[in-house]
Amino acid sequence: MPLLRFEISDASDSGRGSAPAASHSRFAYARRSALIVGLVLLFVNGSTTASGAEANAPAAEKLELLTDFFENEVATGRLPGAVVLIQQHGHPVYLKTFGVRDVGTNLPMTLDTMFALHSMTKPITSLAAMMLVDAGKLSLDDPVAKYIPSFADVKVGVERVDAQGQASLELVQAERPPTIRDLLLQTSGIAADYVGAWVKKLYSEAHLLDGHVDNAEFAERIARLPLTRQPGTFWRYGHSTNVLGRVIEIVSGETLYQFMKQHIFGPLGMTHSKFVLDTREERALKAEPLPNDTILVDEERKRRAHPEWESGGSGLVCTIVDYARFAQMLLNGGELDGKQYLSSAAFEDMTTDHIGPGSGVGHDYFYFPGDGFGFGYGLAVRTGPGETNQPGSIGELKWDSGSGTYVGIDRKLDMLYILMEQIDNERGPIRVALRKLVYDAFTSNDIERVDHH
Image (cartoon, rainbow, N blue to C red; front, side, top):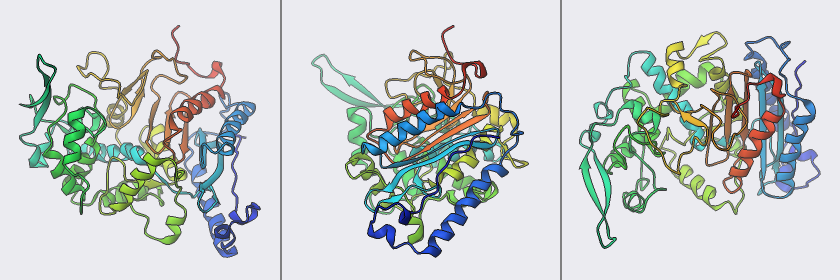
């Protein structure tokens, strides 16, 4: 049988003695325990492969090293808490909670803890767009201006430096309009305020999140800013997926959440995925960053300050169980429980690298797919070893976020792995360690390793 490891802990049985923990009633704990049992059953119901196929199962002693790592991260105060899942052949082979979801309340991490996904929202929004493409309601080659006319006459900002070293910004005409494909590939030229002095200045002066801002208003505001590169020529992470969310609303006639709920969350059984936590109980289940994790604390403050903004790039909140349903569907090639979410052709297009050698797409230091990865529609795609020769499989899909959440989908191993946490300060080292520890748990004979040989 597959190895299953997970903990379900009640805040009141830990001996921590915190007042918020002690205030939980037996009824509330029983309700939560019943909910968690139901959530775990979703994993089993999502199985599409016989559990007897264990030739490439992870080694139990190697999984203990994964446990040791996260226990140490919590014990040393670098991480408040986390939930880690490895799922193979449709079944969890490792599922464990660590630490607390909020150091302010000292309530333990549980399987129904809710996490701000930040950029791990992007694959879900990208799937929603590809479903519209599949249905013939949207074309990848459509100009964005077909749906948002403000993008009809966009300019591209080009920084010029004169002989005296003085920089100035010149606005030039876009050689072609940005398309839906550009939004999916992050090649639209739409950026964020993390790169370049003139970009930071203009984005700051635009006050993108002042006052009431929904997807319609956000798209209008971002359309007034110059693109940072010619469309289709450069991978530049930014607000492309937020604009895509608005396109989905226009094409479908629904809000982004309504579309996702009807076509993705409902059918997949993702009952704890949403943009806004409506009840006090839901908010109590939300994982929080450490108070000294100032960048993430500020980002969370901005996200919560705009419940009207259903950000397709970073706005969703979700449990690990819900995201596992979404990831399993991708692992299955766009299908789960007999329902096909994408045609095989659309799925293949979504999960193929479109920005590699010969594509004409460049990138710089701020290339978040990372070494050895290309990019499909909303997901990084493993194409080779890269200089760092990270472990993994060719064709592996992955994405992560500024809040530390991470998903990897390995079709060669019929395996997915997910990390849910809320941390920015330590997310880089944790991400590297997670990949190594997960792949080290699988023997080299059972996986086509990415290497130089």
